[in-house]
Every structure is written in structure tokens, then in C-alpha cells.
Image 1 (cartoon, rainbow, N blue to C red):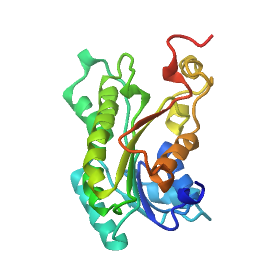
Image 2: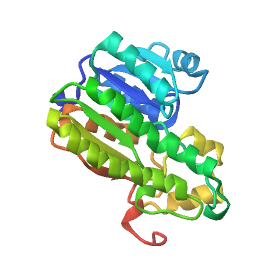
Image 3: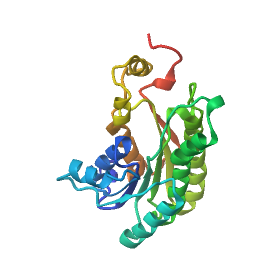
Image 4: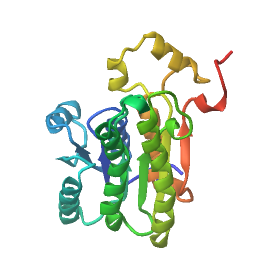
Length: 257
């Protein structure tokens, strides 16, 4: 089991790598011996990584690119093909989740959320599926518990995250012809930098934590641990699945008493 978790220098590409779950995925995968190809649209991304990961073995490469833009994805694909030839895994983390009521939401807002959170998964998967190693390749995409349960003002985000689950199932079917696996990870509340900026300790924050059975948010690394497992050979018989990691959030209705 432990041996099959190792990547032994194989290349793994991670989108949304500059912060939060994506950054933690890079850390965990690098710890397991993967060469990290980090992708993010943040223009200061490279300098941030160099400073934060100083002394670490990653990233092997980083590309400033928008995973929801076909031209950017194509350019990254060409460079990865030239420099690596093939990759062991693709991890789709890039996305966004702003709030907007349906009746006042304009098409631009809807399109932007769907593009960043769902179209990015399609574009990256289409581009890099041919580069995945036959028999062992894996695609892991970050969905959300919002794929299964929602609240007011989250229609675009919920639709995108539910779309990732549906897309992943079809992707798993088509990729299975080459022995490649595809799975979705569905986190509940995660204590990312973005969440902290919105106000850790606020009433909304405390209520969200209280809705989990464990009474807290997940650390990004806890989600990254599951991602790394699914990307590795240790999960060789798991494909087409949407795996929830939410501290028991969806297990119950109402407050935990």
C-alpha cells in the first residue's frame, strides 16, 4: 500500500496551484515523489511559489495560464508534451464560487463561474488525457458537496460542481479503454486563505463549522491527502467515483446536537 502511493519522479500537473487546495496538493504530491507541473492564472504565481517552496523539491515547472481558456490550455499542453512526453496524473483544482441570486444574475456572471469551475475541467481533461500513461494514468477533479446539496445564491457554483461529477463519470468510461482512471473529490468547508479572508470567527464561519460532525473546517492538506491517494496506484480500482470529504456535513439534517 505505502509503496503504491509513491510517484517515483513521475510528472503530475496541478491547476489552481497558487493557493488553497491546489497548493496543498502540490506539497503532498511532491512529498510522495512526484515532479510537480504547477499551473495558475495568478500573474505573481511563480514568484510566490519560489518564495514559499524555497528549499523544497517543487515545482519542477510552473506555467502562468488560465485553465478556462482554450488557447492557454493548448499552449501548456504543447510545452508539457515537449518537456515531459507524458504525465502520471492530472489534478483539476482551478475554480471559483461567488454568490448571486438567480433573479438578478446576469449571463456574464453565470458564464464566468461555469467557465472557471467546469469548462476548465473539460479543457484540461481533453488536452491532457492523451498525455496520461496507459494503464496507470489518473485524473482527479475537485467538485464540492454543493454538487449534492445547495443554498440560496449558489446556483451557478452548484451547477458547475454537479457538472464536474457528471463529466467525471463519462470521462471515466471513455478513459477506461486505456486503463486510465477518473474521479471527483467533493470537499465540504475547507479553511483556505480565501475563507480566512472572508472572516474566520464570524457567525457564518462558526455556523458552517458546526454543521459538520467533526465541528471544524478541513485543512487543505486533508483534502490533498485524498487527492494524492486517488491519483496514485494505491487507488488502482477506484474510478468514476465522486468521493465526499466533508467531516460528516451531508450525513445529517439540521444542527448537530
